[in-house]
Amino acid sequence: MQRRSILDQLKSWARVNSPWAIHYNSGGCNGCDIELLATTTPRYDLERFGIKLQGSPRHADILLATGPATLQSIEPLRRIYTQMPDPKYVVAIGSCALSGGVFHGCYNVLGDLSRILPVDAYIPGCPPRPEAIIYGIVALLNSVRNSDQKITFTSDIELDIAEPVLFPRERGEITQPNRQPHADRYLRRES
Amino acid sequence: MATVVSASDQSRFIVPIGPQHPALKEPGHFEFTVDGEIITGASARLGYVHRGIEKGAESMNWTQCLYLLERICGICSHIHSIAYCQGLEKLADIEISPKARAMRTLVAELERIHSHMLWWGVAAHEGGFDTLFMYTWRDREIVMDLLETISGNRVNYSVNVIGGVRLDLSPEQVTKIVSGMKKLEERTKHYLEIVTNDSSFLARTRGIGVMTREEAQRLGAVGPTARASNVCRDVRVDAPYAGYHEYPVKIVTDTAGDLKARFVVRIKELFESYRIITNVAQNMPEGELKARRVPRKIPAGNVISRVEAPRGELFYYIESGGGEGPERIKVRTPTLPNWGSVLTMAAGLRLADVPMLLVGIDPCFSCNDRLIRLNPDGKQQTLTWQQLRDRGIEYYR
Ligand code: SF4
Image (cartoon, rainbow over all chains, first blue to last red; front, side, top):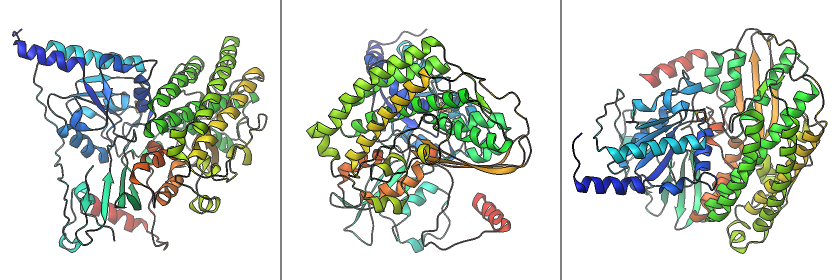
């Protein structure tokens, strides 16, 4: 194994000791979300590992994603992921996020988060118990501590992330039906 | 979060929030039109959690559906399966034993406790009262433990099967349940005191988002949201199902109609739940757990099944073509009718009150993201199959 510089070691020490996490439900049944929330509360106390759940992707190191990735939530997921600063990690929580779980085959789900995001840790279970969630996250942190591999990731799903349009043009100008639903949303005006 | 300025009307701001946002744990997109701090209009865009369950159910058999439908919502999973099983039992003319009915009631009430405690913890968190959030979630673990000892899972318990239940209570479990309820009752009294007396909490809840009785009825609010506005409606009383004939509940209502009333109603409902659970656990009737013969094919017909979920009335429509699986299942969950009330109440409030108001109805997105289409102008519209098909082709082109 390649020897790591002191600076790298220092960086990963800092990273591992206080990762902040952001949570996004990409269409799951809530079961995983409430278990995740329970993980942060006194009985399980995720914060003892320095992990904090917070609201902004800009502050986050870890994306905790639950649910089978419904077609509408692919874009928000990607958007959150691109907004997070490097290095960033993704944890897929629950059977849904791993394989689609019970929703496998439903028309509106993708079923596997690793098709759109580079997932670093998978936590199976429907829902996984809080202990399992802690175990998964800590396993991720351990692997981060011991390596500084760069992940290369390619997705089979092409996706343009729509830039929000802050000053929408007049509605009449948009003649083509916009293929990006979210750009559409920002262009929509109150009538 | 970003601010979009409408080009034609520079004085009005639309603040879009979501789908990822710090306040709620689930995705939903809201647009608030604001004039300074004051909200003048609100709209919601839902559907981020729409998975296509109703369609998915049509390709499964009756038993598989049970587990799929249970996962419509992880918080109120049991009540979904009660609604489903109950409908099927009616269609197939299966009589379930008193024991199964009591067991269903017991777990349903345990679920109500965990749901309400979860809610008011999260609501306190939105109000900036994180201490209360941590305390309630700590106490919620008591119920979670009970649910786990009974069913083996903390969420999605799979207690119901078609024609009965799959689990029984042992004497140790009964003792555990009874002592757990005692403990919770004490804690809940304490919380009721906080919610009604703590001045900083009251400042966030009293007189906020008031909905009168007439409004609640007009907007079709259901569940505790409606009961907080003095609408006396509860399926457990109006059309008792499962074991609610033998173990009747008293409806809790409040006249104030504001956020505080919603807190108080939910907390008082818990006392009812504790009473019922203790009662059921101690007087569990003897009998079979499930019906002897459950047919693989359910006779053709359709049925409506209503139950009271923790958030309000849950409605199932089940249609059977006489085969091994459903022809159509339609689910109407309580959050959907309650949205109207939030969006209406938001007008005139401050933007800072919005998170509290949103959680005030205990929204559950994974339940409510069914596909519906409303015509805002109230006109009726009929689409033929051909038109629908053309639309589909057009959409996916
Ligand atoms: S894995 Fe199971 S519990 Fe978790 S979101 Fe999916 S269906 Fe719900």
